[in-house]
Length: 302
Image (tube, rainbow, N blue to C red; front, side):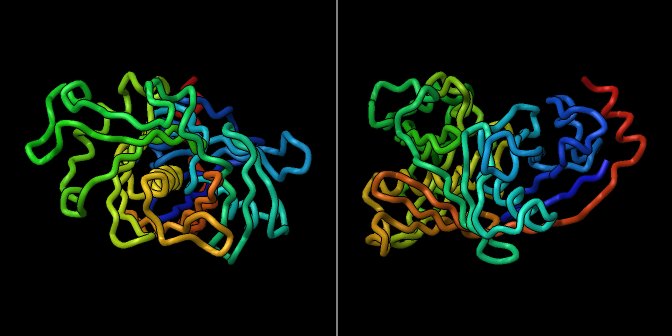
């Protein structure tokens, strides 16, 4: 069983090819592979298989470390895209792949960087049960956190729901000091599992650094606090633009937002109709072959 480990801004995934796996990838097997003690360890597993739609290069399936399946991952998608180019699945600079969230279209910019057409973000979706048709709402901390909020945290979060592949809950914070002081492992789970988000949600807290530049911290559904998240950064950028932030527009209309994450920077271009293009890098970490013992352990799991 051959696999590769890739990372993008510290968000690491194992990449496998479905037709070369000794056993089908299941939630239990994904959990084992992502376990840092029992398996290689990763933020998720990317499974690539032959195309299912005409004109596409491959089909991408994304598994979280808890065994759940993600509709889309901006960082994971870029890792899969750069893998496809390096491994000879295509020699084109522009192509398409399919995901659970639909078709995405990358443009290769260099050996490590690509721009991905993520499609149009939405503020209304079945993943949000709020009453406000704009997707804006309030989360009362008392009902979000069983143990209550930390002493320095507000009693109510104002949020913007954004559906961009995955459901996103974007929360604007007044200043960088408050943002950096948030205890994401304590407050993230209560929002991820809040009744307002029937399919659970990613959560992005962000603050403006300067016009067109925001700092974001991400709590990812099925993962927890993470160094970076492409869809999380996209959700924060869309919410920032909707709230009136931005650099004043780019040459093609809309706004270009630089999102600073713990793992580095991503560029999110948000068009007037909320169409999103995400630009960033992804690189391989290592190529490996699973031991006979690990393959046996995978076979034992359903």
